[in-house]
Length: 289
Image (cartoon, rainbow, N blue to C red; front, top):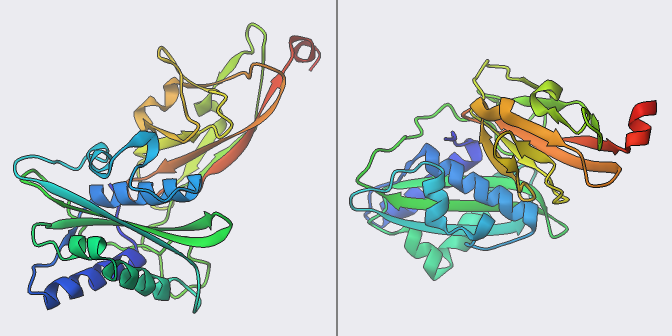
């Protein structure tokens, strides 16, 4: 689940202005749809991809289900995506308007925004490098369901990467993750270590961490789930916070350094990625270290 920030609420207002002008009921923000939208926007930035086909070949509906949106009874879904390079005035408010206008000028995207069957929406606006540009990426996940929903009742937070001193004031802050660099070796007794022993998380509001995401961008499968084996975390993989104690960091196939990443979600905001170095020593270096 995720609570929309001020920029995402600005986009919601633009969507509902269009719907009201067309004689339609407004759509409501839903926290699980927010999460699926934010995740897809982040994934597109991270992988320099722009597609409705997402991580692991997933469809939009599959991503909504994976985020725990309850599709049952009579249901429907739709997805809009858009991006542009950051431009104009400081802040992203003008970019939100530009992105909305672009979507309304596209027949397929406009049809989703003005679809009378949709009742709920999730919005994910993320900022980051996209193919060398300062990109602003948005995903809108629309849905109808006869099942239960988790409405986003407010408590908005700042927009993505809001700099200190910005006019928006955070009502909830993201957790802060710190990781020690890790040294292991290809030798008995030094082959792996517990992730939990090297990780610290602070949350200003004292929120409970819901999940962690692990990423091994070099694809060396250094994260290990005890009793289940190595994890394919090249594009990121999430684990429940309750499973943190089962995660190990394992040695590389050869001595040297590799970079790994971890971040945390407190039920409202996702932390920045925390990078750390995994050093794998040879048996000889391990005994002399």
